[in-house]
Image (cartoon, one colour):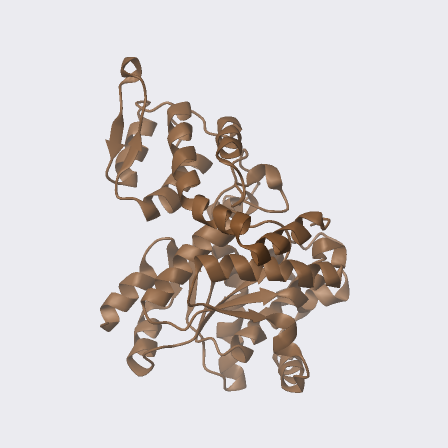
Length: 358
């Protein structure tokens, strides 16, 4: 595969940012199969945002010949008090995550944080050396990558979350750290400090953060990205999420109640799903409706659909019904895998029994 085709795959939506495209081209010119990684905290059930959208992008990397790694960040989950900081629950839940990503992203290597760090004195030395290049205020500014704010009362370990994530890039051998736009601060930190340590500056790739289906969070800031991140689909806020184990009926019911104001395009979570999930998997999006309401209509791209919705030619409920059907088609193979594979089913049940906390 030629370099430009690889770059097109990496740039393909849901990608929103590459730091930088020119550096990516230079990397591919010198390394045919560079290393990649995306890290995941271990907490609740997986949903459209963290498995499907992330998985879409990981699969694009795999097609481009990139050596992909799914990093199950158990230590970071412990630091961020997932499962109430219960280490055994975090380790058990990590097996569920491994099953999901092995199924949805075949070809990606699964790496567990505690295995990476075990008896690894060099990692901890590098972490402290890296931290010498940071101030406390810089660590505070990075707290959003773990869903925290500067106003929260935190324990000391949480201030090491960002530098640990940055040093992970070096330790796991990732030329291309990848994540949602909500993770860019950690990757920018790595890009700034790595050259000071004579480490190769990584090429960061960030994909779209999928909105939750509840009404968007209202912030005082005018920064659109911050509002999207605050309103993202979250496993710790289950009323915002479509989980990969939801039944067809549950999906339909959740979307029936979802926030989707008529004619409103901006910050509309249902349109967000159409753009970044539905049209990723289909070239034609069909919306069936009775003849008295205009009959069945098909859209060849998202832009056509958005225009029709903004003009009031498409009712929210008709859109929701069609989106529910498409989502069910996408997650059905994953849902069936966890229903029929004995090991995967057992890991899912263990996770469900665990108390899910922020």
